[in-house]
Length: 257
Image (cartoon, rainbow, N blue to C red; front, side, top):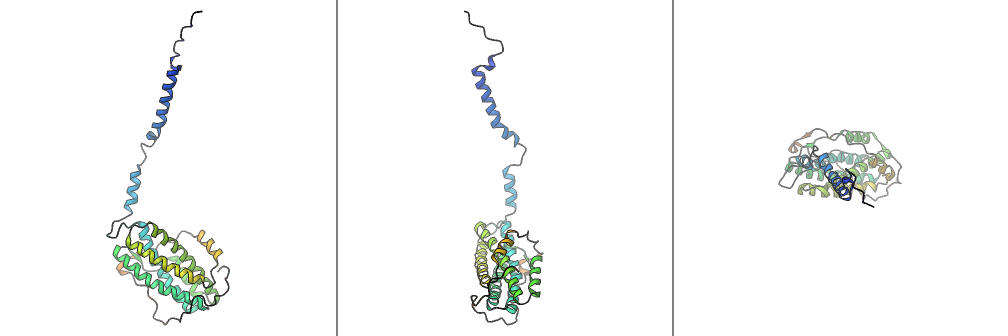
């Protein structure tokens, strides 16, 4: 029996043809991503945008996060010190008055540090508390008795928790030596304040966790001034209380504000 002649036009389906078709399909699959991204911005464009937010200084690069941190440390003192003075005057327990004294001393020192850093780096500073901080101060001014103690411990502990987390993040990320030193100072000062606030016995940790988890976007920073025009945060000339240790007979833990 004679072999059948090949069918015309069937060569593409031969073994060699299948191999060539498979290689072509593979090449097309590899090249498609390159074609599809041809008109998209390159990664270098994003890097340029990020670098534009960072400026060079004699102390190392200064990022947008660094500048925001400097402003927020200034804001912490603008309301933290008067809150501490209110606690020295209105606190009903020695522990609350002690916490107030720590706030006055700590923010006086930290504010001097942040103003020096801002002047060296040319970072504008706010000269008044932000809108939310002004509301907190208004609340503390009208509160009386143990209601004041609870609100003072709760509000200040909440605010210090946010600053403490920010200082740790900046300390881990910054490339600027002045900002690094400021973050170290802020961490130590804020941690001291957190401890004495908790020693009052008025911090509701369950409510604090909920508030920190659901904290709204911070209100805009108030208008800034040249760092050399920033008014120092200083205690009022009125005499302060004698401050006993923070562990002196704190009342039972309260729930909520």
